[in-house]
Image (cartoon, rainbow, N blue to C red; front, side):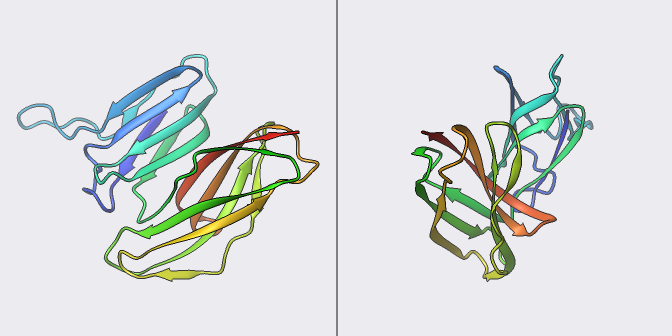
Length: 193
């Protein structure tokens, strides 16, 4: 897997970014490094090798600004471009356990990291215990965040009484649905009987 980073808030090439990839039980860590010697430069693409594996469980890029971008369940043998988010999502919730037929609330903060207004939508997808991903909360109407504005809201989601038990990954996404994903926040929910 080749990972290329691009900065928007940090430097353009995202030099100094830390890339962590986990496949199975083996983490790999790389740092984007601009140069290593007089009049020379390292490649800005980071190569990760996963022998005999078909998927990367988690890919996390921490940019020099402190912003992070996380991706899950990626096929290996591909090029991945990770762009530093201009609008970021964060939450105090990373894991939760709920019974089927109940609901839970997630506090989500959306922040414009730039000095210009940004138009955004927010939507949710979920990855089921079987590995299927689908939209579970439709996109909101387009809203405008002014420069450096942040807003926090509590978002509720109900788990159907017929949902399979097991570990779900929920992805809160922002950007312009469906094609312009800017950032996503991933959290885990264990659904029990």
